[in-house]
Length: 327
Image 1 (tube, rainbow, N blue to C red):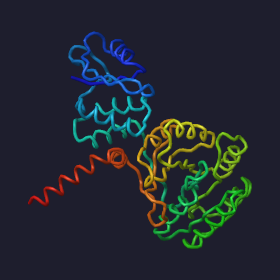
Image 2: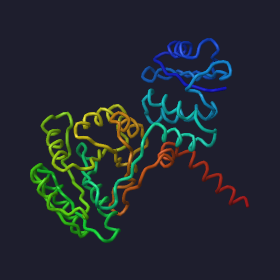
Image 3: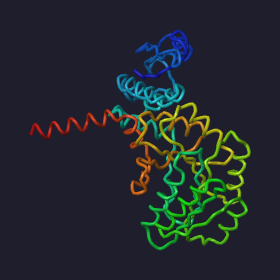
Image 4: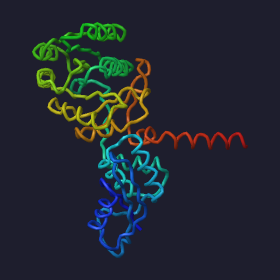
């Protein structure tokens, strides 16, 4: 049998989707009614020898799909995105929930590591106030400082926050990096013209309200002047729809990747998935702790799956521990 999950506002609506999509041969495997905000879902199956549907393939068991669905719902992942992930989870082989979810995440999302060496475009961090852009700039620079043979430049392109400028300047001094101030796009363009291509550049920007067109226009001007790799920075734990709206609002600036901070303070990660999906951008490094020494951690499908399923990872550790004690 092949499985597929359907979401709708009501159980009757989900069953109608099954009928319309799979026809009279469909077998209802499981039904679940959530609260009014989440609606209902139905897992259905059909014999692929009787009907040919392209979206079916051998894969995870119904129990695994149900487990993943509940986990994603607990993280606040929007239902349409859950559907896509569960459909993707039906491909491949039935293995551990973490492996199945990692495979699904790799099919639905893209992952891109931040550059760690010079020669590429400057890295510019953007985002709303209070998400940790300045600290993230320092973490990127600190990681690059571990490599030898090139210089690092930190640019404060923030004409408003004096404290943020002073903070970035202090980080530059500790990292033996060159510090610049760029109050506007023209100044940024001039600075970048004089920096050699063999040097690494990380640009900090003001905390921006993307719904304020004047503030957003400042970021757009900076992006046009610097031609950077633009990284959107958001904190984990936000409401998923709010995060999606924010990510979409920043799209005029042209971010290509999402860097997530505050994972030490967040239990629900639905906002991470919904923001990247809404903006059509890749997932990149995450900040697991605020200290500079903690650095940034590159994110890949397996790591993200483990973050989304922490209980499974804990259960595996407990089993191994018990086995060691028993022996």
